[in-house]
Amino acid sequence: MNVFPHDDKYNASLPPDSLTLHFPVKGPYNFKTNKTYQYTFRSAVDVQDNEIDLKATFDPEIFFNIILPPIIFHAGYSLKRKYFFRNLGAILTFAIIGTTISSFVVGALMYGCVQLMPARMANSFTFLDTLYFGALISSTDPLTILAIFHDLHVDVNLYALVFGESVLNDAVAIVLSGSIQNYGERYQSGSGGFETKAFFKALGDFFGIFMLSLLIGALMGCVTALISFCF
Image (cartoon, rainbow, N blue to C red; front, top):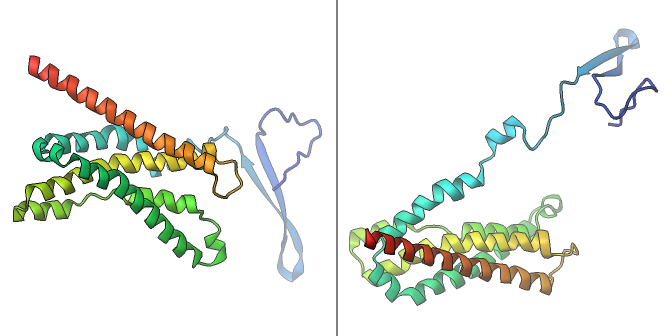
Protein backbone atom coordinates (compact mmCIF):
# COMPACT_ATOMS: atom_id res chain seq x y z
CA MET A 1 0.00 0.00 0.00
CA ASN A 2 1.32 3.44 -0.90
CA VAL A 3 1.15 5.80 2.07
CA PHE A 4 1.59 9.55 1.70
CA PRO A 5 2.24 11.95 4.59
CA HIS A 6 -0.59 14.31 5.50
CA ASP A 7 1.77 17.16 6.33
CA ASP A 8 3.80 18.56 3.43
CA LYS A 9 6.56 19.50 5.85
CA TYR A 10 7.24 15.87 6.71
CA ASN A 11 10.95 15.01 6.65
CA ALA A 12 11.22 11.97 4.39
CA SER A 13 14.79 11.23 5.49
CA LEU A 14 13.59 10.13 8.97
CA PRO A 15 11.20 7.30 9.87
CA PRO A 16 7.71 8.38 11.03
CA ASP A 17 6.70 8.24 14.69
CA SER A 18 3.25 6.86 13.96
CA LEU A 19 0.98 5.89 11.10
CA THR A 20 -2.73 6.75 11.11
CA LEU A 21 -5.17 4.94 8.82
CA HIS A 22 -8.81 5.97 8.27
CA PHE A 23 -11.23 3.27 7.06
CA PRO A 24 -14.87 3.94 6.08
CA VAL A 25 -17.14 1.38 7.72
CA LYS A 26 -20.84 0.75 7.13
CA GLY A 27 -22.81 0.87 10.33
CA PRO A 28 -26.47 0.13 11.08
CA TYR A 29 -29.04 1.48 8.62
CA ASN A 30 -26.23 1.97 6.03
CA PHE A 31 -24.79 4.75 8.14
CA LYS A 32 -21.14 5.28 7.18
CA THR A 33 -18.58 5.94 9.86
CA ASN A 34 -14.81 6.13 9.90
CA LYS A 35 -12.62 3.89 11.98
CA THR A 36 -9.14 5.10 12.76
CA TYR A 37 -6.18 2.79 13.33
CA GLN A 38 -2.92 4.19 14.56
CA TYR A 39 0.37 2.28 14.58
CA THR A 40 3.42 3.47 16.46
CA PHE A 41 6.87 2.77 15.03
CA ARG A 42 9.58 1.75 17.47
CA SER A 43 12.61 1.20 15.24
CA ALA A 44 13.69 -0.35 11.95
CA VAL A 45 13.40 -4.13 11.79
CA ASP A 46 15.71 -6.24 9.64
CA VAL A 47 13.68 -9.14 8.30
CA GLN A 48 16.76 -11.31 7.86
CA ASP A 49 17.76 -10.89 11.50
CA ASN A 50 14.27 -11.33 12.87
CA GLU A 51 14.30 -13.31 16.09
CA ILE A 52 11.59 -15.72 14.96
CA ASP A 53 13.37 -16.36 11.66
CA LEU A 54 16.63 -17.00 13.47
CA LYS A 55 14.99 -19.53 15.78
CA ALA A 56 13.16 -21.31 12.94
CA THR A 57 16.18 -21.44 10.59
CA PHE A 58 18.90 -24.03 11.06
CA ASP A 59 22.33 -22.49 10.71
CA PRO A 60 24.32 -24.53 8.14
CA GLU A 61 27.58 -23.52 9.83
CA ILE A 62 26.56 -25.64 12.83
CA PHE A 63 26.18 -28.68 10.59
CA PHE A 64 29.41 -28.20 8.63
CA ASN A 65 31.64 -27.14 11.55
CA ILE A 66 30.19 -29.01 14.55
CA ILE A 67 28.05 -31.98 13.50
CA LEU A 68 29.73 -33.22 10.32
CA PRO A 69 33.45 -33.35 11.40
CA PRO A 70 32.93 -35.87 14.25
CA ILE A 71 30.90 -38.11 11.92
CA ILE A 72 33.64 -38.11 9.28
CA PHE A 73 36.35 -38.53 11.92
CA HIS A 74 34.60 -41.54 13.45
CA ALA A 75 34.04 -43.07 10.02
CA GLY A 76 37.68 -42.65 9.06
CA TYR A 77 38.98 -43.81 12.44
CA SER A 78 36.94 -47.04 12.42
CA LEU A 79 37.77 -47.79 8.77
CA LYS A 80 39.89 -50.80 7.93
CA ARG A 81 42.62 -49.14 5.88
CA LYS A 82 43.84 -52.32 4.20
CA TYR A 83 40.56 -53.11 2.43
CA PHE A 84 39.73 -49.47 1.83
CA PHE A 85 42.88 -48.71 -0.17
CA ARG A 86 42.68 -52.08 -1.93
CA ASN A 87 39.27 -51.08 -3.35
CA LEU A 88 39.99 -47.34 -3.63
CA GLY A 89 39.39 -47.21 -7.39
CA ALA A 90 35.96 -48.84 -7.16
CA ILE A 91 35.02 -46.71 -4.12
CA LEU A 92 35.92 -43.46 -5.92
CA THR A 93 33.99 -44.62 -8.99
CA PHE A 94 30.85 -45.31 -6.97
CA ALA A 95 31.25 -42.17 -4.86
CA ILE A 96 32.01 -39.64 -7.62
CA ILE A 97 30.47 -41.02 -10.80
CA GLY A 98 27.68 -42.95 -9.09
CA THR A 99 26.56 -40.05 -6.89
CA THR A 100 26.68 -37.65 -9.85
CA ILE A 101 24.59 -39.97 -12.04
CA SER A 102 22.15 -40.52 -9.19
CA SER A 103 21.82 -36.75 -8.68
CA PHE A 104 20.96 -36.12 -12.33
CA VAL A 105 18.57 -39.08 -12.52
CA VAL A 106 16.71 -38.07 -9.35
CA GLY A 107 16.67 -34.44 -10.49
CA ALA A 108 15.24 -35.39 -13.88
CA LEU A 109 12.58 -37.61 -12.33
CA MET A 110 11.61 -34.87 -9.89
CA TYR A 111 11.41 -32.35 -12.73
CA GLY A 112 9.12 -34.72 -14.62
CA CYS A 113 6.89 -35.08 -11.56
CA VAL A 114 6.82 -31.30 -11.13
CA GLN A 115 5.66 -30.86 -14.71
CA LEU A 116 2.66 -33.07 -13.95
CA MET A 117 1.51 -30.63 -11.26
CA PRO A 118 -0.75 -27.66 -11.97
CA ALA A 119 0.90 -24.86 -13.93
CA ARG A 120 0.91 -22.49 -10.97
CA MET A 121 3.00 -24.90 -8.90
CA ALA A 122 5.11 -26.21 -11.77
CA ASN A 123 6.33 -22.74 -12.74
CA SER A 124 7.74 -22.17 -9.27
CA PHE A 125 10.33 -24.95 -9.68
CA THR A 126 13.12 -24.99 -12.23
CA PHE A 127 15.33 -27.84 -13.34
CA LEU A 128 18.18 -26.42 -11.22
CA ASP A 129 15.93 -26.65 -8.15
CA THR A 130 15.15 -30.30 -8.75
CA LEU A 131 18.79 -31.02 -9.60
CA TYR A 132 19.82 -29.36 -6.34
CA PHE A 133 17.36 -31.64 -4.52
CA GLY A 134 18.79 -34.65 -6.35
CA ALA A 135 22.32 -33.77 -5.23
CA LEU A 136 21.24 -33.50 -1.61
CA ILE A 137 19.12 -36.66 -1.52
CA SER A 138 21.71 -38.84 -3.28
CA SER A 139 24.13 -38.76 -0.34
CA THR A 140 22.16 -41.13 1.86
CA ASP A 141 24.18 -43.30 4.25
CA PRO A 142 23.26 -47.03 4.18
CA LEU A 143 23.42 -47.40 7.97
CA THR A 144 20.90 -50.25 8.05
CA ILE A 145 22.72 -52.16 5.32
CA LEU A 146 26.06 -51.74 7.08
CA ALA A 147 24.54 -52.97 10.35
CA ILE A 148 23.16 -56.06 8.57
CA PHE A 149 26.53 -56.62 6.86
CA HIS A 150 28.25 -56.47 10.25
CA ASP A 151 25.88 -59.01 11.81
CA LEU A 152 26.07 -61.40 8.84
CA HIS A 153 29.87 -61.09 8.59
CA VAL A 154 29.80 -60.55 4.85
CA ASP A 155 32.88 -60.35 2.67
CA VAL A 156 35.23 -57.61 3.89
CA ASN A 157 35.68 -56.22 0.37
CA LEU A 158 31.91 -55.76 -0.05
CA TYR A 159 31.71 -54.09 3.34
CA ALA A 160 34.62 -51.79 2.46
CA LEU A 161 32.96 -50.82 -0.85
CA VAL A 162 29.65 -49.87 0.73
CA PHE A 163 31.23 -48.22 3.76
CA GLY A 164 33.83 -46.30 1.76
CA GLU A 165 31.24 -45.04 -0.71
CA SER A 166 28.98 -43.89 2.11
CA VAL A 167 31.86 -41.92 3.63
CA LEU A 168 32.86 -40.14 0.42
CA ASN A 169 29.45 -39.49 -1.13
CA ASP A 170 28.68 -36.83 1.50
CA ALA A 171 31.62 -34.75 0.32
CA VAL A 172 30.66 -35.30 -3.32
CA ALA A 173 27.08 -34.20 -2.65
CA ILE A 174 28.22 -31.05 -0.80
CA VAL A 175 30.59 -30.02 -3.59
CA LEU A 176 28.06 -30.93 -6.31
CA SER A 177 25.28 -28.90 -4.68
CA GLY A 178 27.67 -25.94 -4.36
CA SER A 179 28.57 -26.22 -8.04
CA ILE A 180 24.89 -26.28 -9.03
CA GLN A 181 24.30 -23.20 -6.90
CA ASN A 182 27.25 -21.41 -8.52
CA TYR A 183 25.87 -22.30 -11.95
CA GLY A 184 22.54 -20.66 -11.16
CA GLU A 185 23.82 -17.61 -9.26
CA ARG A 186 27.21 -16.71 -10.75
CA TYR A 187 27.69 -18.17 -14.21
CA GLN A 188 24.25 -18.28 -15.79
CA SER A 189 23.37 -15.14 -17.75
CA GLY A 190 19.69 -15.34 -16.82
CA SER A 191 18.22 -16.65 -20.08
CA GLY A 192 16.97 -19.77 -18.32
CA GLY A 193 18.24 -22.28 -20.89
CA PHE A 194 21.28 -24.51 -20.89
CA GLU A 195 24.55 -22.59 -21.24
CA THR A 196 27.68 -24.52 -22.18
CA LYS A 197 30.13 -21.97 -20.78
CA ALA A 198 28.35 -21.80 -17.43
CA PHE A 199 28.16 -25.61 -17.31
CA PHE A 200 31.91 -26.05 -17.78
CA LYS A 201 32.63 -23.35 -15.18
CA ALA A 202 30.43 -25.17 -12.66
CA LEU A 203 32.08 -28.46 -13.65
CA GLY A 204 35.48 -26.88 -13.05
CA ASP A 205 34.31 -25.78 -9.61
CA PHE A 206 33.24 -29.32 -8.84
CA PHE A 207 36.54 -30.98 -9.71
CA GLY A 208 38.66 -28.10 -8.39
CA ILE A 209 37.02 -27.94 -4.98
CA PHE A 210 36.83 -31.73 -4.65
CA MET A 211 40.47 -32.36 -5.56
CA LEU A 212 41.71 -29.46 -3.41
CA SER A 213 39.66 -30.71 -0.46
CA LEU A 214 41.00 -34.22 -0.99
CA LEU A 215 44.56 -32.89 -1.13
CA ILE A 216 44.15 -30.82 2.04
CA GLY A 217 42.55 -33.77 3.87
CA ALA A 218 45.34 -36.16 2.82
CA LEU A 219 48.00 -33.62 3.78
CA MET A 220 46.47 -32.99 7.20
CA GLY A 221 46.14 -36.75 7.74
CA CYS A 222 49.83 -37.30 6.94
CA VAL A 223 50.90 -34.44 9.22
CA THR A 224 48.72 -35.78 12.06
CA ALA A 225 50.13 -39.29 11.57
CA LEU A 226 53.71 -37.98 11.68
CA ILE A 227 53.02 -35.96 14.84
CA SER A 228 51.36 -38.96 16.51
CA PHE A 229 54.26 -41.23 15.49
CA CYS A 230 56.89 -38.80 16.81
CA PHE A 231 55.22 -38.39 20.20
